[in-house]
Image (cartoon, rainbow, N blue to C red):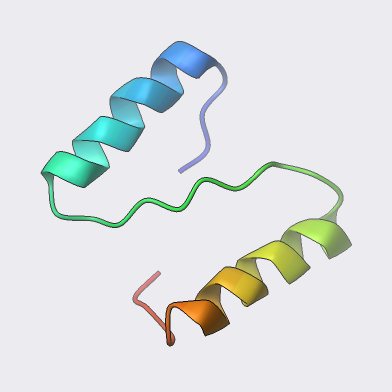
Length: 50
């Protein structure tokens, strides 16, 4: 979930938690770095539903 500010992040993060979704915050960066971050989390969580 992409949000524009910290207030939106808090709302979306807690909505996910309350909805039973494991939220994994990642920082937006260059495409290559972002791809590596998402892949790393994906592998550690044993291929979760995204």
